Image 1: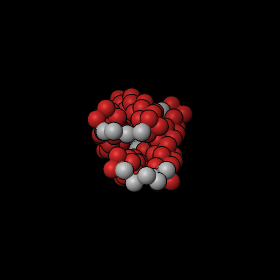
Image 2: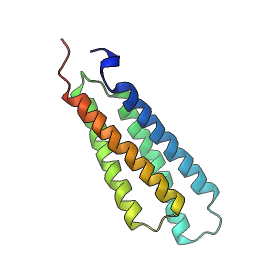
Image 3: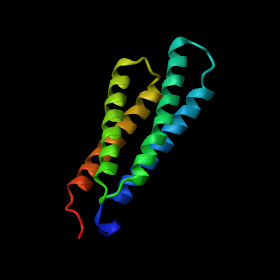
Image 4: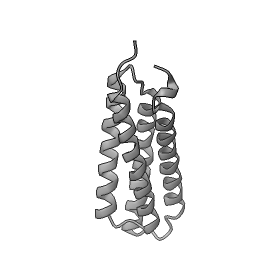
Length: 127
């Protein structure tokens, strides 16, 4: 299967964008943690955890291949888990507005990754 006939390039670009967004957010959270309030500390911990899990997403995104169904399944599972986690934490946790916006952007990226991964998984196998 030719690379151009699959959503691999945009899929990988979205995963890389999510990783970059996560790490920028973690750095900003750490640098702005000046008042040492519990809510701010929770935001920092949360942002760092998301940045670290984004590396797992990156690994799954870069290794996903149409001819390897397990590789796309791994990416699909982590994208669904992250989408749910981002949605729930945006609603439940007392996050700063900028981190809520980051979560919404990350959620949109993960939803598109889910859609593209499902398309990739539903493509017929090449001969």
